[in-house]
Length: 331
Image (cartoon, helix red, strand yellow):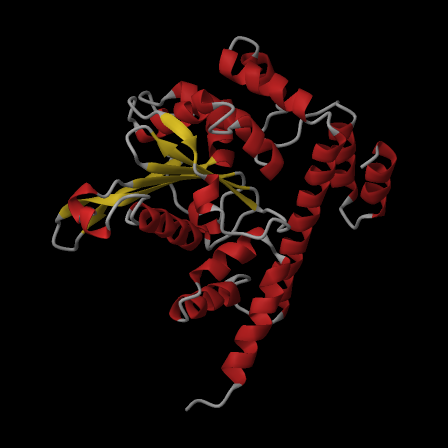
């Protein structure tokens, strides 16, 4: 796509004026795009191109210094249509200890993010329990099934996270707790990271004494790559300065710029769908979406949830299908 056609599409789009200005600055090289863009995240944190960056996040977030990425697992976890417009990015990877890990970048605040992560992590665990080539199913035992890790990086925290009063921005779900007090290790471990909160804590220096400042600095950097204070700090940080230079060079490509614009239009579509839900008279803007999720799970259609989180246009199709099913006479 030519530079002229990109600017024409940007100018003719229904994006707000301030968003158009930001995208124009990005395309001119005056600013960098958010690292949470699908096309950017997949390049910057590629398990194959830059395993050391993914290693850093996994090791520091999980407090497991021995974690080491082996290779991408995109082929195994590739569930969506290649033409879908991403609002959530998954970077699955095999670890050298045979566990399966995923970095999920969420650009838009979505209250069902826990449900989505739980379903995706379950699919990852199911893959771990599947027989490999030249391996018999009888060779697989519960005792030797390798676990999974999913780390969700939220650029904008959903309401349930914002309302939780704590100075912690990382929420680790690694153990199951029974009401009796019994505690058990989980095969699927999920971590939710509030990038926006990490940015606030970093800029205000309002974090705990035992904080992993290196990790906090990286997450604040991902939250706002154009912040002047963080840019100055990044000059003395090889990890951050390397990512900045990588992002700048990568986004000079016109095809990449076209994909960035497409992602912003997808986010706009998603927000339009959320307004539709509110106009339907729901007490909570996403209550209808939560109800839809429960219905899809009851129908054994969990992959449809994953699909519409990556292709917002598919949401309208599912909502119409759910309304039709609800209107049918019950047997």
